[in-house]
Length: 321
Image 1: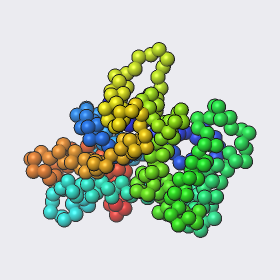
Image 2 (image 1 turned 180 degrees about the vertical axis):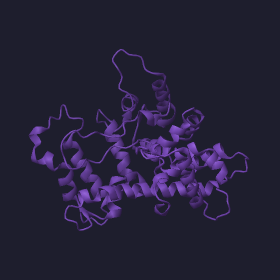
Image 3 (image 1 turned 135 degrees about the vertical axis):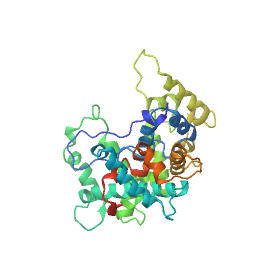
Protein backbone atom coordinates (compact mmCIF):
# COMPACT_ATOMS: atom_id res chain seq x y z
CA UNK A 1 0.00 0.00 0.00
CA UNK A 2 1.10 3.51 -0.73
CA UNK A 3 3.40 4.90 1.94
CA UNK A 4 1.91 8.36 2.28
CA UNK A 5 -1.43 6.99 3.39
CA UNK A 6 0.23 6.08 6.64
CA UNK A 7 2.57 8.99 7.27
CA UNK A 8 1.53 11.47 9.91
CA UNK A 9 0.75 14.69 8.07
CA UNK A 10 0.98 17.19 10.91
CA UNK A 11 1.83 17.62 14.56
CA UNK A 12 -1.28 18.86 16.34
CA UNK A 13 -1.17 21.83 18.68
CA UNK A 14 -3.48 21.51 21.72
CA UNK A 15 -2.63 24.71 23.57
CA UNK A 16 -4.04 28.18 23.25
CA UNK A 17 -1.60 30.11 21.15
CA UNK A 18 -2.24 32.60 18.39
CA UNK A 19 -0.45 30.58 15.73
CA UNK A 20 1.04 27.14 15.23
CA UNK A 21 4.62 25.98 14.71
CA UNK A 22 5.40 24.95 11.17
CA UNK A 23 3.68 21.67 10.59
CA UNK A 24 5.21 18.38 9.59
CA UNK A 25 4.22 17.59 6.01
CA UNK A 26 4.02 14.55 3.81
CA UNK A 27 7.35 12.75 3.68
CA UNK A 28 7.53 12.16 -0.06
CA UNK A 29 7.58 15.36 -2.12
CA UNK A 30 7.66 13.70 -5.55
CA UNK A 31 5.74 10.50 -5.89
CA UNK A 32 7.40 7.16 -6.53
CA UNK A 33 6.52 5.93 -10.05
CA UNK A 34 5.87 2.36 -8.95
CA UNK A 35 3.55 3.49 -6.20
CA UNK A 36 1.77 5.73 -8.67
CA UNK A 37 1.15 2.84 -11.03
CA UNK A 38 -0.24 0.74 -8.21
CA UNK A 39 -2.51 3.55 -7.10
CA UNK A 40 -3.90 4.02 -10.58
CA UNK A 41 -4.70 0.33 -10.75
CA UNK A 42 -6.65 0.57 -7.53
CA UNK A 43 -10.39 1.15 -7.54
CA UNK A 44 -9.91 4.28 -5.45
CA UNK A 45 -7.81 6.09 -8.05
CA UNK A 46 -10.07 9.17 -7.93
CA UNK A 47 -9.23 9.51 -4.25
CA UNK A 48 -5.57 9.02 -5.13
CA UNK A 49 -5.83 11.99 -7.50
CA UNK A 50 -7.01 13.98 -4.50
CA UNK A 51 -4.38 12.89 -2.03
CA UNK A 52 -1.28 12.30 -4.10
CA UNK A 53 -0.85 15.71 -5.65
CA UNK A 54 -2.86 18.32 -3.76
CA UNK A 55 -1.82 18.15 -0.12
CA UNK A 56 -4.24 18.03 2.76
CA UNK A 57 -6.81 20.66 1.80
CA UNK A 58 -10.33 19.28 1.93
CA UNK A 59 -12.71 19.55 -0.98
CA UNK A 60 -15.54 21.25 0.82
CA UNK A 61 -17.09 23.29 -1.95
CA UNK A 62 -17.49 20.73 -4.69
CA UNK A 63 -20.17 18.82 -2.78
CA UNK A 64 -22.39 21.89 -3.02
CA UNK A 65 -22.63 21.61 -6.81
CA UNK A 66 -24.93 19.46 -8.87
CA UNK A 67 -23.42 17.38 -11.68
CA UNK A 68 -24.79 19.86 -14.19
CA UNK A 69 -23.21 22.83 -12.41
CA UNK A 70 -19.93 20.95 -12.08
CA UNK A 71 -19.79 20.16 -15.79
CA UNK A 72 -20.62 23.74 -16.73
CA UNK A 73 -17.87 25.21 -14.57
CA UNK A 74 -15.39 22.50 -15.56
CA UNK A 75 -16.03 23.36 -19.19
CA UNK A 76 -14.95 26.93 -18.53
CA UNK A 77 -11.74 25.68 -16.94
CA UNK A 78 -11.07 23.50 -19.98
CA UNK A 79 -11.22 26.63 -22.13
CA UNK A 80 -8.49 28.16 -19.98
CA UNK A 81 -6.30 25.07 -20.16
CA UNK A 82 -6.48 25.08 -23.97
CA UNK A 83 -3.75 27.69 -24.33
CA UNK A 84 -3.51 27.59 -28.14
CA UNK A 85 -7.31 27.47 -28.55
CA UNK A 86 -7.23 24.54 -30.97
CA UNK A 87 -9.97 22.60 -29.22
CA UNK A 88 -7.63 19.94 -27.84
CA UNK A 89 -5.97 19.55 -24.45
CA UNK A 90 -2.50 18.05 -24.68
CA UNK A 91 -0.50 16.48 -21.88
CA UNK A 92 1.80 19.52 -21.95
CA UNK A 93 -1.10 21.95 -21.55
CA UNK A 94 -2.54 19.90 -18.70
CA UNK A 95 0.84 19.68 -16.99
CA UNK A 96 1.26 23.45 -17.25
CA UNK A 97 -2.16 24.00 -15.73
CA UNK A 98 -1.51 21.58 -12.87
CA UNK A 99 1.74 23.37 -12.01
CA UNK A 100 -0.08 26.70 -12.09
CA UNK A 101 -2.77 25.41 -9.72
CA UNK A 102 -0.13 24.01 -7.38
CA UNK A 103 1.77 27.28 -7.27
CA UNK A 104 -1.39 29.29 -6.77
CA UNK A 105 -2.39 27.09 -3.83
CA UNK A 106 0.93 27.73 -2.11
CA UNK A 107 0.75 31.51 -2.45
CA UNK A 108 -2.93 31.68 -1.53
CA UNK A 109 -2.18 29.69 1.58
CA UNK A 110 0.46 32.22 2.61
CA UNK A 111 -1.89 35.11 1.89
CA UNK A 112 -4.51 33.63 4.22
CA UNK A 113 -2.17 33.66 7.23
CA UNK A 114 -0.04 36.72 6.43
CA UNK A 115 -1.97 39.18 8.61
CA UNK A 116 -1.84 36.80 11.57
CA UNK A 117 1.93 37.19 11.70
CA UNK A 118 2.61 40.66 10.28
CA UNK A 119 1.76 42.26 13.60
CA UNK A 120 3.14 45.74 12.88
CA UNK A 121 1.71 45.80 9.33
CA UNK A 122 5.02 46.70 7.64
CA UNK A 123 4.51 44.02 4.96
CA UNK A 124 7.27 41.88 6.44
CA UNK A 125 7.22 39.22 9.10
CA UNK A 126 10.15 39.34 11.47
CA UNK A 127 11.32 36.34 13.43
CA UNK A 128 10.21 38.08 16.61
CA UNK A 129 6.71 38.59 15.20
CA UNK A 130 6.44 34.97 14.16
CA UNK A 131 7.84 33.75 17.47
CA UNK A 132 5.42 35.90 19.46
CA UNK A 133 2.39 34.88 17.39
CA UNK A 134 3.26 31.20 17.52
CA UNK A 135 5.04 30.68 20.82
CA UNK A 136 4.08 33.74 22.85
CA UNK A 137 1.74 31.90 25.20
CA UNK A 138 4.26 29.12 25.76
CA UNK A 139 7.07 31.56 26.46
CA UNK A 140 4.91 33.50 28.93
CA UNK A 141 3.53 30.38 30.67
CA UNK A 142 6.11 27.58 30.41
CA UNK A 143 4.90 26.01 33.64
CA UNK A 144 1.64 25.00 31.93
CA UNK A 145 3.38 22.68 29.48
CA UNK A 146 4.32 19.19 30.56
CA UNK A 147 6.71 17.84 27.93
CA UNK A 148 5.99 14.28 28.99
CA UNK A 149 2.35 14.53 27.93
CA UNK A 150 2.27 17.21 25.21
CA UNK A 151 1.82 15.89 21.65
CA UNK A 152 4.91 17.77 20.64
CA UNK A 153 7.46 19.81 22.50
CA UNK A 154 7.46 23.56 22.04
CA UNK A 155 10.96 23.54 23.44
CA UNK A 156 12.04 21.41 20.49
CA UNK A 157 9.96 23.14 17.84
CA UNK A 158 10.96 26.73 18.58
CA UNK A 159 14.67 26.37 17.73
CA UNK A 160 13.75 24.24 14.73
CA UNK A 161 11.43 26.94 13.41
CA UNK A 162 14.12 29.56 14.05
CA UNK A 163 16.64 27.52 12.05
CA UNK A 164 14.17 27.16 9.18
CA UNK A 165 13.28 30.87 9.30
CA UNK A 166 16.94 31.89 9.08
CA UNK A 167 17.45 29.57 6.10
CA UNK A 168 14.46 31.12 4.34
CA UNK A 169 15.69 34.64 5.19
CA UNK A 170 18.04 35.00 2.25
CA UNK A 171 19.20 38.54 3.00
CA UNK A 172 19.78 37.79 6.68
CA UNK A 173 17.77 40.70 8.10
CA UNK A 174 15.56 38.42 10.26
CA UNK A 175 12.48 39.78 8.48
CA UNK A 176 10.76 37.72 5.80
CA UNK A 177 9.15 39.27 2.76
CA UNK A 178 6.36 37.38 0.97
CA UNK A 179 8.69 35.15 -1.00
CA UNK A 180 10.90 34.36 1.98
CA UNK A 181 7.90 33.61 4.20
CA UNK A 182 6.46 31.39 1.49
CA UNK A 183 9.68 29.39 1.43
CA UNK A 184 9.52 29.19 5.23
CA UNK A 185 5.99 27.75 5.24
CA UNK A 186 6.41 25.63 2.10
CA UNK A 187 10.11 24.66 2.03
CA UNK A 188 9.49 21.69 -0.25
CA UNK A 189 8.73 24.13 -3.08
CA UNK A 190 12.11 25.90 -2.96
CA UNK A 191 15.47 24.43 -3.89
CA UNK A 192 17.41 26.37 -1.26
CA UNK A 193 15.14 24.93 1.48
CA UNK A 194 15.35 21.28 0.54
CA UNK A 195 18.27 20.48 2.81
CA UNK A 196 16.09 21.75 5.65
CA UNK A 197 13.26 19.42 4.62
CA UNK A 198 15.64 16.45 4.63
CA UNK A 199 17.10 17.40 8.02
CA UNK A 200 13.66 17.86 9.60
CA UNK A 201 12.54 14.51 8.24
CA UNK A 202 15.59 12.86 9.79
CA UNK A 203 14.94 14.59 13.11
CA UNK A 204 11.30 13.49 13.11
CA UNK A 205 12.01 9.82 12.51
CA UNK A 206 15.42 9.29 14.17
CA UNK A 207 14.20 8.40 17.66
CA UNK A 208 17.52 7.12 19.00
CA UNK A 209 19.40 10.21 17.87
CA UNK A 210 22.15 8.40 15.99
CA UNK A 211 21.79 10.53 12.87
CA UNK A 212 20.27 7.72 10.79
CA UNK A 213 16.89 6.10 10.21
CA UNK A 214 16.82 2.34 10.69
CA UNK A 215 14.07 0.02 9.52
CA UNK A 216 12.16 0.04 12.82
CA UNK A 217 12.22 3.84 12.97
CA UNK A 218 11.04 3.99 9.36
CA UNK A 219 8.10 1.72 10.14
CA UNK A 220 7.27 3.36 13.47
CA UNK A 221 6.86 6.68 11.69
CA UNK A 222 3.99 5.12 9.71
CA UNK A 223 2.53 2.50 12.01
CA UNK A 224 1.83 2.36 15.74
CA UNK A 225 2.40 -1.31 16.45
CA UNK A 226 0.23 -2.88 19.15
CA UNK A 227 2.31 -5.08 21.40
CA UNK A 228 1.86 -8.70 20.43
CA UNK A 229 -0.33 -7.85 17.46
CA UNK A 230 0.41 -8.97 13.92
CA UNK A 231 1.74 -6.54 11.33
CA UNK A 232 -0.59 -5.76 8.44
CA UNK A 233 0.52 -6.85 4.99
CA UNK A 234 1.25 -3.28 3.96
CA UNK A 235 3.80 -2.99 6.79
CA UNK A 236 5.57 -6.09 5.54
CA UNK A 237 5.61 -4.50 2.09
CA UNK A 238 7.11 -1.32 3.53
CA UNK A 239 9.86 -3.35 5.24
CA UNK A 240 10.68 -4.80 1.83
CA UNK A 241 10.63 -1.29 0.35
CA UNK A 242 13.10 -0.16 3.01
CA UNK A 243 15.46 -3.02 2.31
CA UNK A 244 15.18 -2.93 -1.48
CA UNK A 245 14.82 0.76 -2.28
CA UNK A 246 15.43 3.02 0.75
CA UNK A 247 18.64 1.56 2.19
CA UNK A 248 20.72 2.08 -0.93
CA UNK A 249 24.09 1.10 0.52
CA UNK A 250 22.63 -1.87 2.43
CA UNK A 251 24.01 -0.90 5.83
CA UNK A 252 20.63 -1.31 7.55
CA UNK A 253 19.82 2.38 7.86
CA UNK A 254 19.22 5.54 5.87
CA UNK A 255 21.58 8.49 6.01
CA UNK A 256 20.78 12.04 4.86
CA UNK A 257 21.38 11.33 1.18
CA UNK A 258 19.27 8.20 1.24
CA UNK A 259 16.49 10.13 2.94
CA UNK A 260 16.81 12.79 0.24
CA UNK A 261 16.53 10.10 -2.44
CA UNK A 262 13.41 8.77 -0.70
CA UNK A 263 11.45 11.97 -0.22
CA UNK A 264 12.78 13.89 -3.24
CA UNK A 265 13.22 11.43 -6.11
CA UNK A 266 14.80 13.47 -8.89
CA UNK A 267 13.66 11.38 -11.84
CA UNK A 268 9.93 11.81 -11.31
CA UNK A 269 7.69 14.76 -12.21
CA UNK A 270 4.41 14.43 -10.36
CA UNK A 271 2.60 17.04 -12.50
CA UNK A 272 3.67 15.23 -15.66
CA UNK A 273 2.52 11.90 -14.24
CA UNK A 274 -0.85 13.32 -13.21
CA UNK A 275 -1.35 14.92 -16.63
CA UNK A 276 -0.49 11.66 -18.41
CA UNK A 277 -2.81 9.76 -16.12
CA UNK A 278 -5.74 12.07 -16.81
CA UNK A 279 -5.18 11.93 -20.55
CA UNK A 280 -4.82 8.15 -20.56
CA UNK A 281 -7.99 7.60 -18.55
CA UNK A 282 -10.13 10.04 -20.56
CA UNK A 283 -8.79 9.73 -24.12
CA UNK A 284 -11.61 7.76 -25.73
CA UNK A 285 -10.29 7.89 -29.29
CA UNK A 286 -6.67 7.27 -28.20
CA UNK A 287 -5.20 10.24 -30.09
CA UNK A 288 -3.22 11.25 -26.97
CA UNK A 289 -5.19 14.49 -26.67
CA UNK A 290 -8.46 15.38 -24.97
CA UNK A 291 -11.45 17.24 -26.29
CA UNK A 292 -13.77 19.14 -23.99
CA UNK A 293 -16.35 16.42 -24.57
CA UNK A 294 -13.95 13.69 -23.43
CA UNK A 295 -13.12 15.63 -20.29
CA UNK A 296 -16.75 16.32 -19.43
CA UNK A 297 -17.60 12.68 -20.05
CA UNK A 298 -15.10 11.78 -17.32
CA UNK A 299 -15.73 14.86 -15.17
CA UNK A 300 -15.55 12.96 -11.85
CA UNK A 301 -11.87 12.26 -12.40
CA UNK A 302 -11.05 15.88 -13.14
CA UNK A 303 -12.81 17.38 -10.17
CA UNK A 304 -10.91 14.86 -8.08
CA UNK A 305 -7.55 15.77 -9.58
CA UNK A 306 -5.06 18.58 -9.26
CA UNK A 307 -6.41 20.12 -12.46
CA UNK A 308 -9.23 21.65 -10.43
CA UNK A 309 -7.53 21.85 -7.02
CA UNK A 310 -9.93 19.59 -5.16
CA UNK A 311 -12.87 21.09 -6.99
CA UNK A 312 -12.25 24.55 -5.56
CA UNK A 313 -11.90 26.07 -9.03
CA UNK A 314 -15.39 24.90 -9.83
CA UNK A 315 -16.90 27.18 -7.22
CA UNK A 316 -14.87 30.25 -8.16
CA UNK A 317 -15.99 32.80 -10.64
CA UNK A 318 -14.44 32.32 -14.07
CA UNK A 319 -12.66 35.66 -13.79
CA UNK A 320 -10.87 34.52 -10.64
CA UNK A 321 -9.04 31.70 -12.43
